[in-house]
Image 1: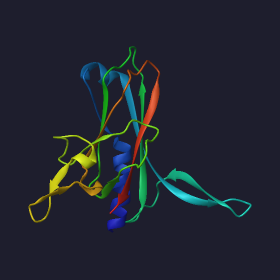
Image 2: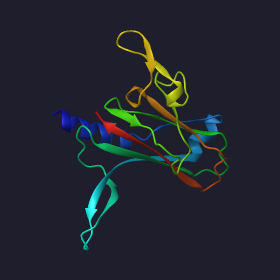
Image 3: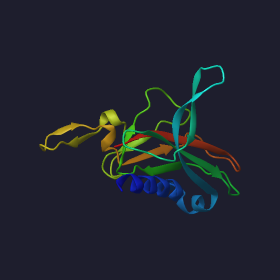
Length: 167
């Protein structure tokens, strides 16, 4: 039963998309389109016997599975969108997995307190079960936030992404 619920929860989160904010909130609501998709990487055997990793839509996700969320954004408005910020909640069943090196998108800031404070994961702490502060871990992350470094011109699109593990 739990596995079925998790599949539905992942699908619902992917379909719901992500939260969006900018310094120009009113204009941005009419100009940006956001899509959220969930993928897994699987090993595929080639005809010559070698294998390669391929990204496929996540269908069945069981505990311990790593998933990749890809958020695609596009400026569908009539003017350039400046100061764009994309905020995405992390489902409670997932543990954020920080990328070791720079990825194709801007590095996200993280929050471990539902978006009240933001920073690099290594700079954040949470209270442990014993009440003593400890370094925050991927499983403590509640939200991710990306600040686009440049304005988004009309028709321009891009992606941000993150990896997480189903607990």
